[in-house]
Image (cartoon, rainbow, N blue to C red; front, top):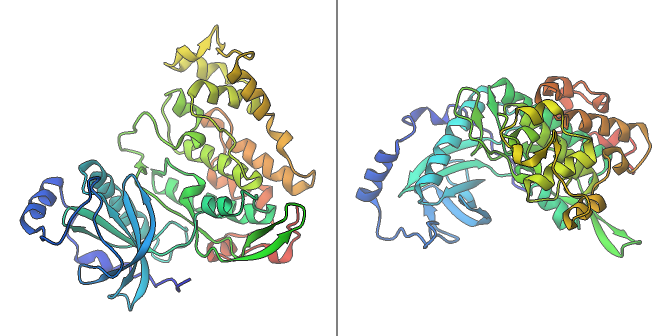
Length: 394
């Protein structure tokens, strides 16, 4: 893993304010070079060895999404340091989302130049022939990809503790900055370094990986929303979506806390808490795991089609009813150990999965939770592991 370059927070001062769509379109049509081409989906066609802006030399593709691609590049103006370059498709809605993400990143990075609050650092942005491009610190695998490549072997309780603390610290910083992330999930929590040790699992006859350092960063601010901005009706990836979002009761910071509760469950057990693609089934799973939806929320929602006489309209005897019954159980029955720290984790998760947003745990309080008693903000922010002086066995 390349040493992380030092972030120079004065770097952006020579930039003008973010370009408007019309400015981008005009400069795009005037300056687009014959050698710059897009594929039919709007991705920039580029390959290893290509250089953008006489600065970014492409090494390889790190990932691809609906928005575009992320490339590993050598940044020749940062002493040859490796960076991640997000190249947005030449499609207006994705370009606009990128402009919003740049705006969020400039604000949160500007207020935290030393990266104490563990949100990914943006180094630079530019418009390359109609493609918005954002340069970031180069990170490693996401916590989801590591889990997937490790046969969904759960993280140890000590690893969950350290990652949980860092996520709460980072997202509290966002909330203090009047922002809601709105798309927290294991794919958007990245390891700083995902190097691992290997041990042979005799029982399962396979090699199991243990990540060496659980230092993480929160990424993907493309859907982050300031408190005063328009709040779209639906936010969050399905499995991490809070009940107030499903019921269209309005949302704010607490919807992030719900997502974190779902993420911690997934780290601890290796599978998703709410494995569904349907609203009614999602609510049925919540009821099976967490108890009935509060009557106040049922009364207030416009989504009355999900309810009948003040209760969830759900057929227990249907195939979907059977699926929920067989795949979901009350939350505490998922405990892997009766040890105190396991119960403390579930107490934390329970308080994050409170139906009523106003009663849900706030992140300032989460950092004082007994589950984190042995850690400090200093340790978490510096990226140190806590496993060294504690038993992390399951």
